[in-house]
Amino acid sequence: MQSLYFGRKPVLNQDAAIEFYELLYYSQNMNKEENGFIFQSLLCKALDKIGSQLVVGKRKVFIKVDESLFFSDKLFTISSEFFILSLSADIDVTKESAIQRVASLKEKGYILAIDDFTLNGADMQKYAKILDEVSFVKINFDKNILVNEENIDMLARVKERGVSAVGKNISDRFKYELSKRLGCGFFTGYYFSKAKMFEGDECKPPRLNILKLYSLLANDADFNLIIDEFKKNSSITILLLKYINSGAFHFKNRISSINHILTLVGREPLAKWLMLVVYSMANLPNPKTSPLMLMVKNRTELMERVLRAVEPDAGKSMLEQAYFVGVLSLIDVLFEDKMQKILDEMNVYDVVKSALLHDKGILGEIYVLVRDIEEFKPDSIIEFERRHSLQSGTISNITIECMKETSAFEIAVASI
Image 1 (cartoon, rainbow, N blue to C red):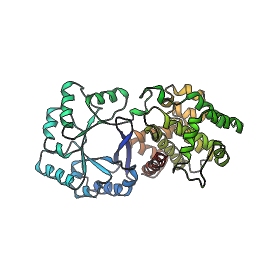
Image 2 (tube, rainbow, N blue to C red):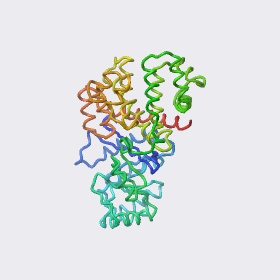
Image 3 (cartoon, rainbow, N blue to C red):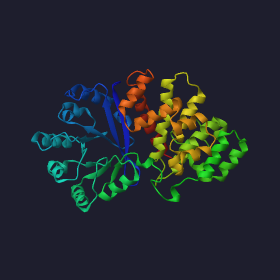
Image 4 (cartoon, rainbow, N blue to C red):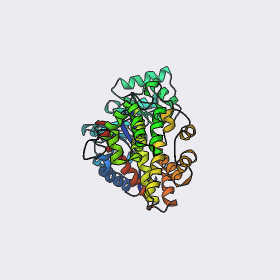
C-alpha cells in the first residue's frame, strides 16, 4: 500500500452540496507497459481496506477502471456498496465481450459511469449498446467543450435514457456556468473554493463581527469582553454551541455557554472552532457541512499531521501555526477579498502570513504540498517525501487518515 497514492475530490449537485466523491489513485511502481495485474491486486486490497472510510453516509465514490481491470476477476473484489465504476476510454465497449461484461456488472449491483464522454456522433455510436446500463456520463471540461444547441440536444437525448451528466474538472465559475448550460446535474472540481462563486449577501458571514471576535480571542482580551462580544452575535454563538455539542467532540457534559467553553478548553481552541463554524455559514446555500468547511477541515488535518511527520519534535506553538495556515487558507474566499488585506486585519503569526502569502518556510512548503494533494500531483508528493527523507507512502497514509477524520467530522456535525 505504501506505493499507492490517493486523492479525493467532491462531486457536488446543483444545490452545491456534496453528493458523491471521486477517488484518484496512482502507483509509484506502476509501469504503463505492464499488463497491470500486480497493480490491480494492490489497488483492490487498498480499496478493501479503506473503502468504507471514504464514504460519508450513503455517498458513493467514483473510481476509474481501465481495460485490464475491467476484464479482471479482481474487479469483483471492489465493493458495489461503496464504489461507482467509471469506465475509461480505452475499453472497447463495442465488442460483445465488453457488452456482456457491462451487463454482468449491472446484474451484480454495480453502478456504472462512462469516465470521459465526448458529445459527438462517434461516442454516441460507441456507447449506444451500453447507455441503458450506465447511470452517469462524465464530460471533461479540461477539453474545449462547445455549448451549442446541437450538444445540448445530444446530452438531453442521453439524459432521456435515465443517465445523469457530471461535469469533470470544473475549476472556476466560467466552466461551472458552461456545464450547467450544457445540462450537467453534477460537478467535480474545486470551483466552490473560488471567490465570488456564489452571490447573495445572505450567504456571507458578518466579517467585522467575526474578525473582532477572533481578535479578542487571539489577543488575550479580558474574559468579560469576549463574553460580551459573543452575546452581541447570538446567531454565531448558537451555531458554535450546536457545533461543539455535536458528535465531533467528546465532552463528558453538554456545553451550555461560551463562558463554559472558555473555562474548559481556553481561547485558542475556541478561536479555531469559531473559524470552522464561520466556513459552514459562508457562500453556499444549505451550509451546515459545506464543501468549503470540509475542505478547510481536511487542510488543517493535513497541515498538522505532515508537520509532525517532517518535524517529530514540533511543539504546541508550531502545530497551532500549522493549523492556522490551514484554517485561514480560504479566508479570501470566505470574505471575498484579498488575502493580504484580511490578514492585515487579524492578529496572525508572521510565519503564518509568510506561508499563506508567499509559500515561505516549512509551513509554506507543507501548504504547497496540501494543494498538490488536492490537485492530485503524485510526482510532487513523491518529491516532497524524498526531500524530507520520509518513507515512501508516508504522505499517502496521512492523506487517507485525513480523509477518514474529515468524513467522521462531517457525519458528526451533520447531526446537529
